[in-house]
Length: 73
Image (cartoon, rainbow, N blue to C red):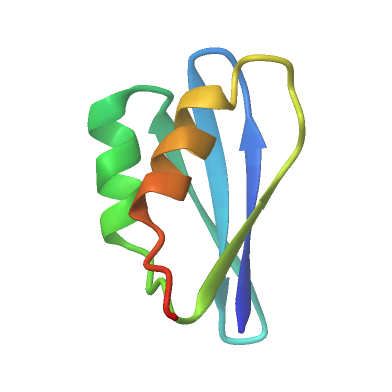
């Protein structure tokens, strides 16, 4: 299991991806297009996303993350 740390703002968010012994960061616009790009980089069986509660700024990202989750029975 690997954690992706996300710092969310009104117009963008920064995701910290594990790399070797540290992390590498990528910045995305806080819109549907860039969130889709971000989701495409995740291995949903390996990555777990953690983000701060920043009012409504993270709502779209959280909604799209939840929609992308594959639930196994």
